[in-house]
Length: 343
Image (tube, rainbow, N blue to C red):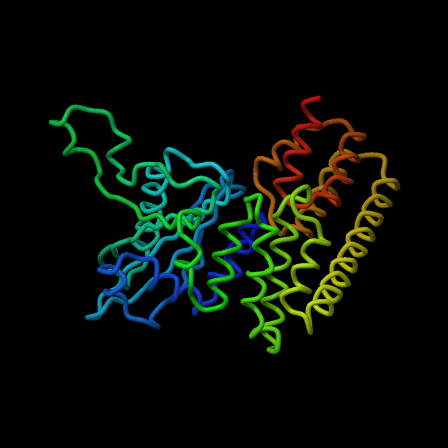
């Protein structure tokens, strides 16, 4: 899978690259006549992304090839919108991505014909999805010309629109969907004890502890500190997992502190390297910022790379280096960088 650049994106990939969670999701949230066509257990991930580089801060995607009952195949393409607002032209973007998928499959000689694609938008913004699902709604033309316009519609899974009781599923999927639903909401803190209580059965399993840590890290990295503090999360975990909650939080806190120490050592090493160079300091400074961002967030968008390339002030680059170490996410760094460069 592609490297991730955003806590929502990382959590999405952590959950939906687990086959059991994705298969359950497709079985529950695809329309009945569509899900009934799928052969359970016959699912294969495609290791490509079809999103433009500059959009990866706001979107991620997942393509899986599924077997249909009767032996045929199809693709399910999931576009994850991890921004809090809705993109009016999403149907146009989906058409672009679908053409890229078909173009990719065209190069595979063992597929003489293009497979059908089921496009699904996964959305978890605070407001319900209000955009038309039909591509031709984007085109304004006389009826006589509509036959020349591509016609398809996409599916939407808008978790904000589902009552909690309709998000019931296996523990992994249910907890993930509830976190996606409430992560942008003011009442996230009130919901956490109930969400964590669902994890009791996971606490006694080795893989369960890894999942609980995944859930908690997502909350700590994605929820605004002004709305939910680390102490609030600790309290919710303790309340829901009375026998193991404190131990879990101590373990996670130790790991986060160790990661912080590693980041500090990396910053010091890079600063020292810059101090020892005169010629080429600008280039070295940009490389230092990018190294820290890549070490922390694994991938950096081209928009950030381009912005750094245009900075010709070593002092500003040193400030950006410190911000790269402190930022909560790549989006946090981008916003801080834009603020610094525009002042």
